[in-house]
Image 1 (cartoon, rainbow, N blue to C red):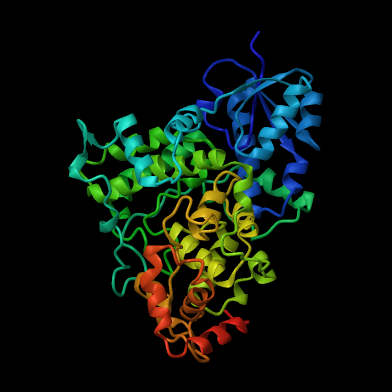
Image 2: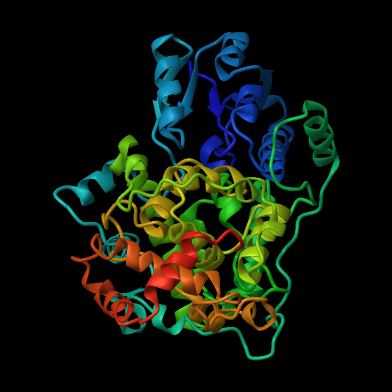
Length: 487
C-alpha cells in the first residue's frame, strides 16, 4: 500500500500533494517555530498555509501538533513518504528518520523545473558558474521565449533595458495595485495561537499580504501578468519611498511556499510576450527560470561548507539595531526605509536587499554567515536554501568570486540615481568626508582601501581601486568610517 505523504510547510501546492486520494500528513512542530527568532508574519504565513491546506484536503489530511517532527511521526504511528526538503539540516533529519523507520521513502522534489540530477550533469566539470550560461540552457531545455533555436527578439538578455531610475517627480508608479488576500477565520486562529505561544520573534504583526493557498497564489499570478507585468521591466531596479511594491510580482512567497510551480509562472508570463514589452517579460522570466532555479541548485551543489566562505575576513557581529529591526537606528533614508520594510512586512524588493542592506553590510564588514541567517529569518520569503548564494555569494562576494564576477558595492551616487531617498536625507550623497558625509559614499571608498589587495586580480574592480588611490583625502575618509557610529 502507498505510504501517507508528509508535507513540509514549504511544499503546499498541488504539484506536491497531487489530486488523488493519498493520505497527507501535516506537522506543526513547536521546536521548529522556536528554533530561531523568525519574523512574526513569516510564522503566520507558514501556519496559515498548513492549516488552509488541511481544510482544503478535508479527510485526506491529518494534522499533528507536537514538540518535534520526530515526536509527531511517532504519534502518527505509520511510516510516511516525504519529498526532498529544502535545507541540509532538514535533509539530515529526514535521513535519520528514514534509518529509524519513521520515513519509508524520500521522493524527488517536484518544486523546481530542473531536477537535482539534471543540474549535476550540467555542472559537471565547471569551475566557474555563470548564471547567464545556466539561464540560456534553461530557456533551450524548456523552450521558453524561443524562436526555433534562437531567443525570441534576437537577444537572450534585456537587462540593460531594465535599469531606468524612478520617474522624475513621481512618488508612486502609475499602475494597478497588487492582488491582496482576504484574511479569514484560519488567520484569526493562527494569530491567536501565535500570541498565546509567546514566541521570540522579530518584526511587527500585520495583515497577511501574501497568498497561502494554491487558489490565492493563482489569483495573484493572474493579476500580476494581466495588470502589472507590463510595467515591471523599466523600473525593476528603482526605489520609491512611498511605493514599496513598485511593479514587482510579490510572488516569491507563494513560490517559496511551494504553492506555484515555476514553469506555470513562466508560461503565464510568456503568454504575454506578444503584447507586452519583451524586455520586461524576459526580465521577469529570468528571475524565475534563471536566478531562482540557479540559487536552489547551487545551494546543494556548493554544499554545507559554502556558508564558511569569508573571502574578505568580515568579522563584525550584526548590531542590535539591525537584529531587532530598529529602523530608528539608521539616519540614512535608504537604510531606514529598507529596515522599516523588513520590520513592517518582512519583505523589500531585490535592489533594497542587494544595494541597500547588502551594500551596507559589505561596507561595514558584517559576518556573511550571520547576515545570511538574518535574511533567512527576517524575510517572509527566506528559507535556508534561498539566502546563502544570494547573500554569501552575490551580495557579500564572500566566496571569492565563485558565482559572481565582482562585489555588489556602490556609493551614494548610485542610490541617488536609482531612488528618491537622497533628496530628503540628512546625509549628502556627494560628500565622503565631514559631518554630512553619506555613510554609503564614505563607506565605499573606505572599503576599497581596506580590500585593495584582495581585489588585485579582479579586473572589474581595477578602475574603482585606481580612483580610490587618487583621492587626496582617503586617509581621513578611512579614519572617519572606522569610527562612524551613526548610519
